[in-house]
Image 1 (cartoon, one colour):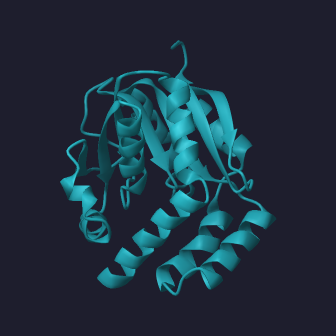
Image 2 (image 1 turned 180 degrees about the horizontal axis):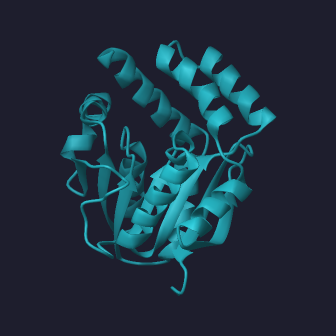
Length: 221
């Protein structure tokens, strides 16, 4: 349902903006690339591309050039993203492509940072490890994983938010299911380690429902 998908992407963008998802990603990326005048970021599973747009705006405000390539394996999602927010196709620093995160069509070290927000909880462990290893391959400085944390309070919050904050049927179904499927911080850390990445920093969301993990390839500085 195209209309429901567009509404779901708008809901996710509001959640990222109002409940700290954007801020977590911004802080994590800054931890990997402090003070750089220009940075190239790959956003895997970009969805609405709302976090890339926010990061680009934040960069402009600080005089930093942030170039972001967003990929999603569902073309209908990228088409809906362009309707949900027309800036997606009007922002020069943002380019969107259809691609599978398990086999990224980019050379080694093509970007400074590879970033994924609200993606890993959708994946089974074996698939997640492949995805994270691919992200590590194309990211010269490191990887940022911003995702939900499984827990009772997070589940209650997602249920309440999905009932009180939207009438979108996809959001109402997906929000609590996503928390149930989410990994713990220890499990996320183990997945990163299995993909050859070591976590250097953990940034917790204000409500304890979400975390950003900053990781580098083993042996990298």
